[in-house]
Image (cartoon, rainbow, N blue to C red; front, top):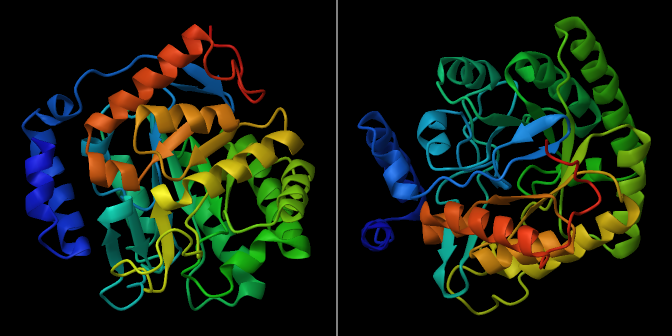
Length: 354
């Protein structure tokens, strides 16, 4: 069914098709048909960050920036859904066209630029949702906010989403907001993470519930840079790391239609680079939960991500190309591999499930 729908959607430009597909999922959800699109829901619970995930496969941020489709996406069998990136104020993002498919390699290039309806809209949509699974909310800064004042935007978002998120992700790795990736390194990262950790602890205390903080990093780092980032993450008491965001590299796609478009490249072309970062993070952060994302388009790819050291995985581009059936395929493969001992069992960040 999805193959037919995809053949029709792929005749449209990527962003138009994206919107139509999400509205179609909403309609299927209202009719009670969304679970049938995904097939069997895989029950493979795991506990990390003090949260119980129904299975190890999540939806990455970026697909549902405003939490407008949370119920429909949550009905597809994901163990968790991450929405955003959201900024304090609404912003339109970069000019269109800004989303491009590279079907020859299962890739997508985007330069969306944190287009979103603002944090107040997202919070209202999360509150209205009936989805009872694990919700991550990914936060960022507005384009107009100078990098030296970025912490103000992250704090504003954190304070507004804290009561409605199971975990919050600090996005410092999108290549589509000028200067944002500077926040991944050195004193910038220390100051940002230290301030957010302090604010998060205060909000936890006030609310009587702990909301873990995760950081999402880029794949475009040298080995020594990953080590330095890992140290900052550990020193500031961050609860998890998501590896990785999109890449600015065009290795493996040169010469393909749209390959020279500006923006971040996701999908199969980033798979190995993402895995390399996951492996390096695991070396330096043996006990910290790692969420692996980048290029997962099959159950085998999900297992490889876990073998690299990821405790959980997230889908985005593979979900676009393969459809809802990929969720159960990956969750089932991870469950079977863990039970048979084929995957690393367990990565050091994992806690035992009851």
